[in-house]
Length: 181
Image (cartoon, rainbow, N blue to C red; front, side, top):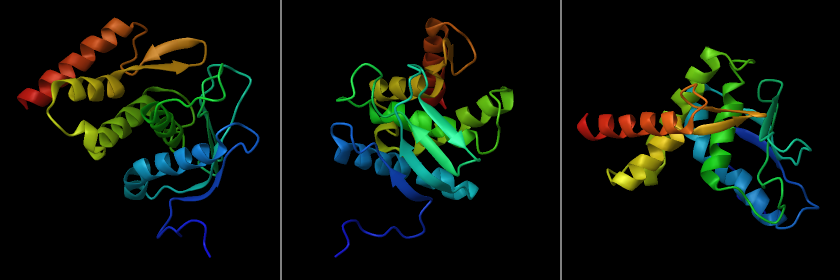
């Protein structure tokens, strides 16, 4: 008997979670959910990931790593200070989009950030909870797509600024554009 259903045309070939951490079954489920959320984006581009793995690096701000242009992608699923909890799925999905951007661009230059922002917009269009014109959901959509991200010890926002208030203004502008357009 198969424990898990075989996936038709998988974009991720293998999943690895940290088996010695608490809530390991949930960690495996989260990895599969994140892959499922970004699967249409990956398919459109013909991207495949060999292994999607959970990791717990010693660097507090390291949330993901991509080796070999997608041969193996590591995601931090849990906050640095509490291995019993998990980050919200939207945060993990955004890190996954970041790591997928490294399939095309190695460095964090303007081309990388342009692709990452494009992937975020596509993600927001795919996920049903971001498709409604409910103001709160659209603000979250805009904030997710333009929000602050950790890039090591230096925090930057998706629009390139270091100021979360500027990112919020960009998010509100995106909201107005969506509601008007």
